[in-house]
Length: 105
Image (tube, rainbow, N blue to C red; front, side, top):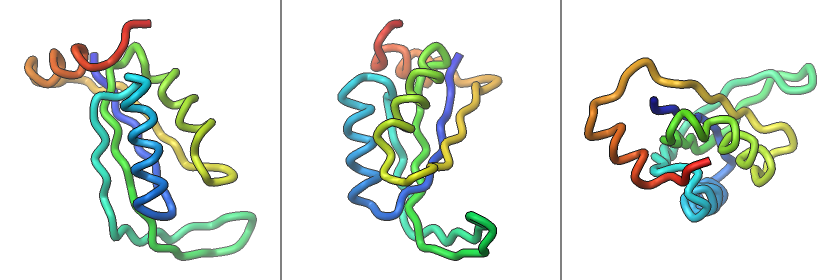
């Protein structure tokens, strides 16, 4: 089974640094960096707006908890939004590719 992790970052440099670290540790097989995201939010009781960079990480479901925890450790935000979920299905080539690139736990 495969899994996805979504998280916003303040800029491309910090998104790329996190992606490279998780790729290097073989916790994810891919990171899609999506620049130019506009975020509207409530933080500590105040409304806010920011330009952010979203990242969608792809991994094997067996590594979801570990990859999410590691991302929380390295993320530059004080309280980062990190959401992970197991996918219901994936094409066989996608599933096999992910499994070949991430480490076994």
